[in-house]
Length: 287
Ligand code: C2E
Ligand code: MG
Ligand code: MG
Ligand code: MG
Image (cartoon, rainbow, N blue to C red; front, side, top):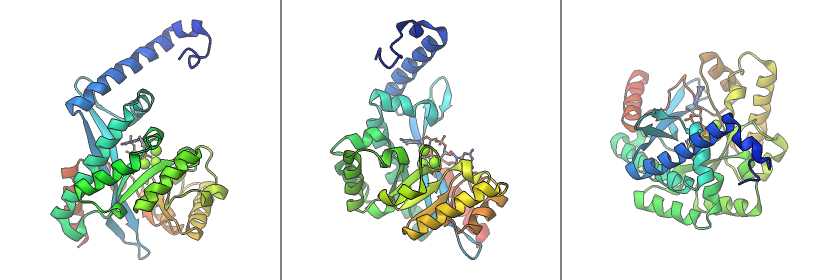
């Protein structure tokens, strides 16, 4: 731990660092409590199909996103606690909670909406979850318990994760062998590269919001999106444009043949009952 602090013990006593360490410790102990007291919940953001005829398929799928109803601080967003969960070993319990809840809600929607229910559930995955050798078996058990088909689940991994050591690669292939699909999240950030896409065992590429938000205004970003979609298509992979906020951005990614989209333009992440309302209302309007 001393090493991680930079090797220089003095820096540990700088007020800003001490504050950060204290805040981290607070989050960690509060998070431990949250898992026991059921303060975590899951919201779902629609992932819509961008049909070639210009229409929008509202039932293509959703992405599960964790939230924390903190007793004092209100709703805490994931960027404030996912990393702490990963570093403290709580991510295993958190991840299992999200997966189980997501599968349960997904099956409830099938009963409520029949063939108008979302067809795919995407769940974010952390490195630490793949570190557990028995994790693919856990996923299989959760799917079986909830009555969900493996093909209805998609796990989202980042490129730095998907390109990691053999152990991670093996586990990803095990998940694929079960029939679960994999999506590459936040593509275009980090050290992502088009030339290594073919080495990754993914079925879907999610183009990062930082590209999509300039899809309509920057030629450079448009070209990058176009290239990503072309390479993905040639490898038999699906594409999703993340973070679509305007009609102009939606039109731009549609023009680049991106198959699916996700973003505030269509819907913010919603609780399960709100998602049901959104689907029912939007389909009525579309009908
Ligand atoms: P992500 O997987 O890339 O998820 C997309 C994020 O973009 C979500 O933020 C979503 O609310 C946000 N977003 C969607 N559409 C728009 C838009 O049009 N504009 C803008 N500005 N933002 C949009 P959120 O929910 O805060 O999650 C942040 C990140 O936290 C996720 O990024 C994911 O990496 C991580 N995360 C969330 N839930 C989980 C989880 O259950 N497990 C793990 N391991 N990570 C999670
Ligand atoms: Mg994601
Ligand atoms: Mg992400
Ligand atoms: Mg993303």
